[in-house]
Length: 72
Ligand code: FES
Image (cartoon, rainbow, N blue to C red; front, side, top):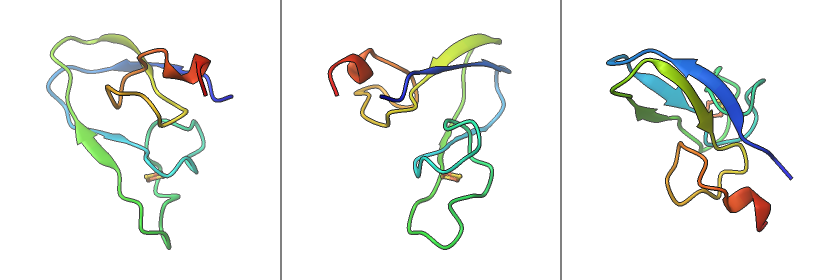
């Protein structure tokens, strides 16, 4: 079971959510998707703070954890 990863994100900057699951931290793209059909999901946040990002990739509110990992 992939549990969420807490990451501090800066407001009003583009962040790249890993959709392939191969990145080192499992949540932010580090280019490991190269050679696959996956592409990172671009997103921003309104407030600079720590967020729980989805590592199981099943959240209904990607890139944020919504607790779905407890059911898969
Ligand atoms: S490393 Fe997973 S989408 Fe880029």
